[in-house]
Image (cartoon, rainbow, N blue to C red; front, side):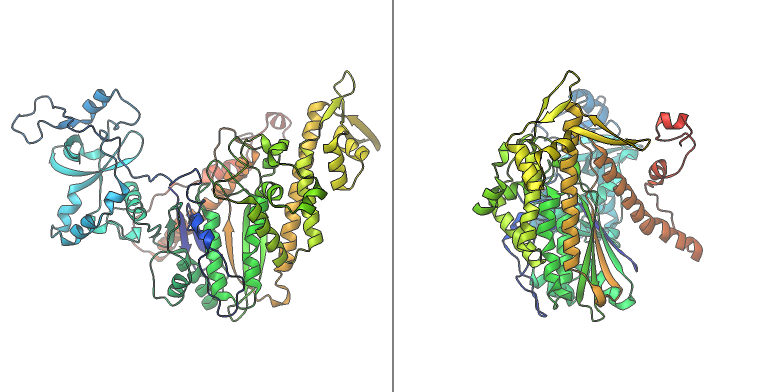
Length: 639
């Protein structure tokens, strides 16, 4: 399930995202009365990627087990034949025995496999009308609905038929009744509370209740839900009609107060003007949840309200450039950010955007030289090969994407529904808007081509010690030409290592494996330096300069937690950053609030939450030969 959490505080608006709305097409110019309109790209779906991107709708967490066979009956030992439950009641233990204890069956402490909940069924108009026409007491409804947990961790919504001692008889689906331990059940909220837009309104704020409410709203394309000061957004992976001028005007005029990213951006802007305190919108969530799209939607709302100077259009046009050079297709997301960014938008005293600054973090350099099967390297490689004009193609001697070693190892060259040639034209247009000259653009693409050609540079062994030299073929000649050096200099850089020992320069010949690693390291370094240069040029174009007033709204978009079959140092850094972000969220939402209650002497019930401080301390605090460390350093007293 994809979700977005947004928190509005005096000094920060924290938005945690596991999903987001659809892409929006910006207007060509933004005058004072700028109005945003939906464009064709909105069809790409909210958040993580376009509909039909191979991911499909992210599974909703509240669901029951496998479909029951129609007419299945299990008799309980010793039950009275006259009992209304005698022909179709089964205990959790018996059900587990009948199924052989399969992984998808009910946990013995929870329930046997009930029917899976249909998201659409939960939202049928008949049921909705019935909720409001039902005159049953509120207390009775609370008692009759409970959740039981399945073996796979999912929750099933059940109806209590009877309770005797420490056991309850539950109706899970038509023709199937279960008898379970009452203590294993979780109370469910009455039907009147199904689909509330703020989770704080629920009578029972438990895990299954929260998940069920999110599923209920999700089934009706209501992807945004509040949780007090936090916004949760579920990625629909399709186009939803929640954006555009009508919605922007509604939230600007306060005529609509339903949960939305627009509401978070509007709150941040209003508090910045009112309190003259800088605001921040923090977006977090798992990989593929749609954090980048959510950030773009927040930026577009701020641009529509703070527009008029023209700089806001330049800010929006940085997105195609950064996505081309910093995003890639992964197994979970067709447009996954492989770097983190902090966009600081500055405002004038009148509330108009006067500039911006972008900071980037943790670019995944390893993706330049290798990526998993089914994934792609950075978009710009494929866009350049598909969309470069004939003159540029001839100058760079471009080949097809499946002919480059760095690109063909993943066996994935395209994305469904994405035209790489058209995206290349979009990138070059965006570069024009942020004032990157044509000459600089050609140099940028020359470096991109040089990185691709580097992967095709090969070596030949020259002696019995496995020392190598580069082969003077087309690849090495193109790399030397694009980098502006000779083949001899390139050979020296890739096959020799220079060291200085006791004021003496020593040249060491490299083996085949060492030379290959050096070649890949050069490719990664070239691409990382190119990315940093692009960000620097963008910041020059968006520079605030003398217009700086000290008022700003920052939007943090950092890629989410990752765990693959093969994890590298990048995954460690990414997950560590997410742990720090979670700690920041916990501190502001739980710790500081509870400390304030204690100081003010307010009677309150402590809220238990999962504190990750111990995890952070393991890496951050200096320890005496404990925690994660290198044994050789410990022996030398280095830690």
